[in-house]
Image (cartoon, rainbow, N blue to C red):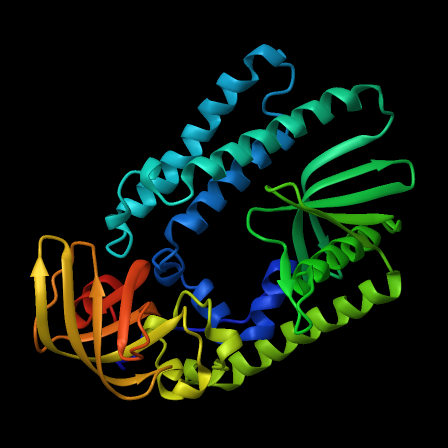
Length: 379
């Protein structure tokens, strides 16, 4: 599993607000993202796919796709748009050997509540569009910017402006908060940076600073960001410096693995770590994290395998747990045999106090060596 993945890193023409966080975390994640055969094959799962469908629906509404439609027809039209977006995510999920076990989208965990939230938010947007007819300003959905000689580019979800007044709004389908050590919830720092970068791009393009920005979640949470021009310009400097560092390192390094920066923070939610050898070299039990257990080892026993329920023993060689023999159990259809090499991502510790019992959930990635070879097509 440690063979070359055939990555051929190339310099980037520009950086976007959303890409800045990935550059800060790990250059190799950006290389994977820029490589089609990996970008389109990483595990996403229902949560991310539902989020993508929600975001796509809101984008279509914001662009005015239902403009002029009578209020009485909103619900049926929104149902139609939702079905289109969710059908595409369902198709992609069913094409993935890692996700096909999730089945039809209507059975995905969280489907009903995410759909309800998306519908409610879409109707709020439609109501605002009706109210805005008497407003003298303009609304621009998915406003694209190319700023700083084209080195900084991005697309803001919504920009409202009238004369020299403007504000930026960005939708997020998941939680917009992160917990501090003191226990307080604050706006995620990279979301704040994104708003400041959009503000700087608008100023570079128009000469006018937006008055404010807003991060809005499907759950109704809304956080405002005051635009400080000096702070925005500092974020631009950081973004462009990251772009220069990435391009310089790509031009200098012949081994793509030299671009990686494995750490608990950078790797925890990375969708590429199953086949990222630097991760497996660096990861250790010191990394911790009870809900994101990653192990690499050999199946040494199949204890039960009745219908879709199974329990195996695996000799763990590497991972964020101690080496040794672990018992792993799951409840979905999968073929596991003694002697197989296995990498499992996103396992959880069992509810017992026994630390060597691990549980595979719907969100666990199970990679056999044959799947690594056939699915990822390593060279």
